[in-house]
Length: 307
Image 1: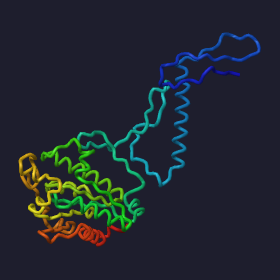
Image 2: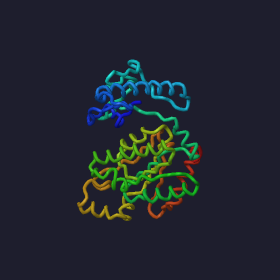
Image 3: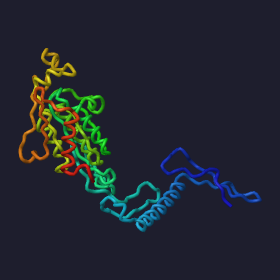
């Protein structure tokens, strides 16, 4: 009978050298045999290769339609060298280069957006609230979220100031940084919509091209633009954060409506159906709850409050 003082180490480590292997007998025997490091590597490699082949066979036999493997091409059959240094197997193809990210591969999951929507009994979408500072975007976002919640619908608010506390804290209010701010929020909103959630974004988003770029991220009908059309003088009279006063005094540069433009959503035919304009002029202002109900009614009309 043969026993070893300790288990063989993995081939990948060089911490262990030789291990003694003794034959237990009742009489004196020859000096203990030594299992060299290279021999242990060959043993481990053979075992690993054998286990790998068994695993591949087991997977091939048990694979079902529930799991969809990544499409790939085989360059060669799986092989195992004597020293266990390398395995050559399935090499993944269809890699992509996106921006500065190279050699990336999109991984599909069996659970898709329609499955999540069925679970939540609603359709994921993005409600994009845009307007001047002080127009009531954040207030409307909260009222809208409350209205949806009371109907048993799941929503989440991406508020411009809140996002700048974390994800976008590295961005300023220069034109290029404002565009990047919108791009990042658009990408996050897209993920929420894909999860089946009704995502409500609340931010000035002054530039038409940036809003259009976010619209292009989503399937047709899943981006709903809500323009809160409140005149500048009304917003400036409200001035809930005191920003207009600072901008007029020259202490804030590039403030939307003062020394930086706001581009209202255009009412072209291709976006008119998916655009809601909430006008508030002078004292004729609807309450946040009333405005929220208008948006909810629109969601019901286009079938987003059911799976």
